[in-house]
Length: 271
Length: 95
Ligand SMILES: Nc1ncnc2c1ncn2[C@@H]1O[C@H](COP(=O)(O)OP(=O)(O)O)[C@@H](O)[C@H]1O
Ligand SMILES: [Mg+2]
Image (tube, rainbow over all chains, first blue to last red; front, side, top):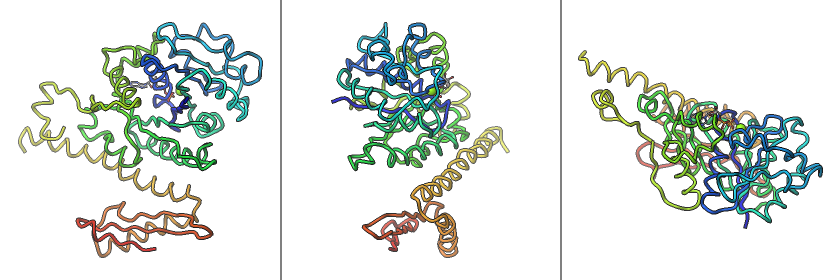
């Protein structure tokens, strides 16, 4: 059975596209046939993060409008077998997305793929609504910061009411939390909400914590999903999250700062 | 004040930044959940005032008073949970 997963948050710039690319590459590396769809019509960026921007010929909207066949628009990743990208249109606007059109494309993809990852745009308008509407599972990407947590809570409300599963009274969308851009040193100093704080407020299962890391920017500069940077902290944190997603038990790493001499001297008992 | 305790007190002062964020979030989120539940718009105020009344007699947390609006058949049910400190068994439930 194909699983449709939405990567969503409400707020922009929190790491949805980074996460979509990482999860898609991670699931494909684990042998699952995976396609990742950019729902950010007009502001596409997934192709850049995946490093396939020069191979975009047709896009999601072309397929919805019947201007191209699905296999003409799908881009096969050159690094990971079984990984495909369906890019967004750069020239249309979000009204080009229709419920029927999205459903038709998802149905067709379901015949081929184990996982369909929907990279949601920011906001709670049409693009974000359609990205979550058909989902079986949601990865709620949240930064440890007031407005991001608040927006995530609103998105949880929408997942519980505005999805196909909710409307049909089917079992609800499985929601899991991914805290990203986490800076343990700032949490330790009491400047940043801790994972426990965020989890207590949102009250959903924790899938993982991705540390704030310069590797993420470097990876996006070179068009490489950060999960493939196997030695970096962010890459490993994403690998753990994907493994948990697939049902493995893994301890959370990168929750505390690696202490230098100064930290050990003045760290006190709390860390 | 010793050198070390200076640093420790700096840490304490900053500690309020994250806890302030958490407290604000708990309030915002509780309000928005009530509003999204499609309830009447006096619910957040009702919740605030109930909390104030409880706090006149018992020292409780901000989130000790929880309200939830449910639909049971034709009936709308306002569920009110007040958790008293220390002894969770004494939670009072009004329906
Ligand atoms: N863990 C991280 N550490 C550092 N920077 C990050 C991290 N995650 C995301 N970023 C940066 O944040 C910005 C927004 O990320 P992006 O994935 O495009 O967010 P969204 O899709 O939610 O708008 C990008 O510049 C990205 O490099
Ligand atoms: Mg994005």
